[in-house]
Image 1 (cartoon, rainbow, N blue to C red):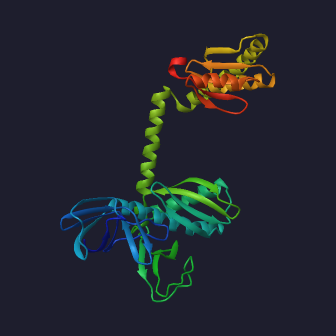
Image 2 (cartoon, one colour):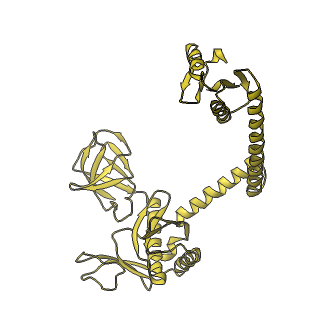
Image 3 (cartoon, one colour):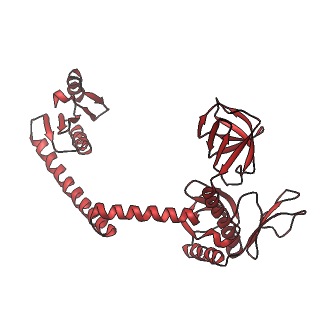
Length: 346
């Protein structure tokens, strides 16, 4: 399509354009566009509105410095437009049904890059209700109801949400929803392609937030989860749930063994006159536990593991730490002092 580049600010990376494109608003992000002019090429996927109009952020630019007030060719990312339109029409269907079935009005809506949200006023978190809503949204999609978009000369009292516009732009799904809206939509509910609720979470005492996806986006999410599942299967060599359960049991057993080992170490330390233990097969957390125990017993201890990390405690801990620092060690702390030795001092 043809358009006109109105102005370009190279320092801020912003431009303004006149074209038949969606500039964002009402919870829906802007189109993603490519602008080709005499000797230059600009790509943008984000816009914002200020008093001076709508400004597009330059994502990439090539060629000469763009001239303003010139005719340009504008290409919309049609796949992105379809994806966003699917989310928006799905939201209208869901919001209308949530209000009809349970009296939950939608008070917030936003489409993000990977998911969308609806905020329902006065909603509860009954999973059966959301399963019912999800099913009914998909039934409306299956019915392939036309989605009509038009400007009316007078405000209809039957609109789902009040509007202050004198001549509002209406999006109507016959028998389902009728609402003032400035966003983009599919022309038929069948083109939404499918709908799923991904998460239901309480925002505060008044609102419940519903995270959802539809159409192309839902397919992409499903694909990502399947690929991730396959990677986990390959990594864990078997059924994911079964292997995770086994690993958790092993972790529990190792933690018990570690606890018993630390108790034995504490007994050995209490009976030993040695202050300096090195090349220990212990992690920092374990060494800190032992050093803290020695603090309680007023017994000096310096522990160094196989990687050169150390922990020390006791009444003379600061003196031992200063000796380490003179040799280039780093670290610090109050009570239990921790740090790392230089390679030469391990």
